[in-house]
Length: 377
Image (cartoon, rainbow, N blue to C red):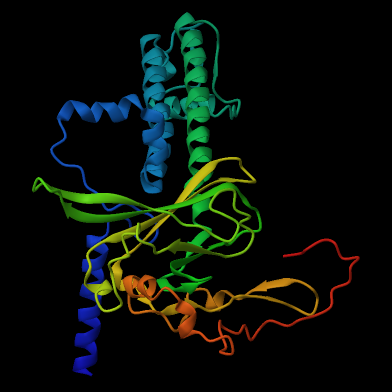
């Protein structure tokens, strides 16, 4: 029992160290911190106040929402109280005969606050109203109505903008937990699986990657987070993907690939981070979004392949089994990319009479009526 608890604690600490060492987390958040920023540069966030309000967290947005309305009600309540007091409306029973108040039925700070709230929210219970005797009261009710409308528009705009942020659409795009390295179509490939959880498409999708690692230049300069481009392709290319079902992204490990000098037994000893990007435009909202994730060497499996997840039902529909989305199985794979390319004829490892590939046990060949020209998901 003690060993089990100790192992769980060790695994948790190791996971936290890995999480801190990432530049991009699995959910796409960037692990970066800005330091020694000059004080006057903080005002740049106030100049771009719209983006600042849209990007703040919901807890602060709700606090700002409550504070803006209650604060404006209270400030204008004080102004209404000052107008009533300066006009002598707070004297109660000692009011002179024929006295006309600026606002009827305001006899204290509480009633002044209630009148401010009723005015700005256009409730109008009918117990308190401007009499038109004071020009200052008429001007103040106009000003409060305009400011209240501005606050309403601004808050509604910010909330709608936060709800419709493109990164919310990115939450329904998921990547496999691990990447694999195996052979595909005569090439050694690094493969990653990605899926769109919605039936609506991402228009103009583009896939690309960056390999981040620390390098030393010939001049002796150490470059932290040196970026190397990683090209990914699918069967249909790498641009304008038909992203209706899960796709397997492939990076061909050739002599120009940074993975070319790696091997099965040295991969997990490397220090790098593979960041994968998916850009596209949401079909329903026409807003551009980007999905990011990252893989470290411990999350790349050499000599494994993904299980099939697409099959057809008897009703003619295509079925996607997400229980196998990140599952892998071991397959015959060369020990290193250099070995694979030096052999020249990799078909020697796979004779023509040898079974290749992975069976999809859930796939069933059926006859589909030719009249059914619409594919349902």
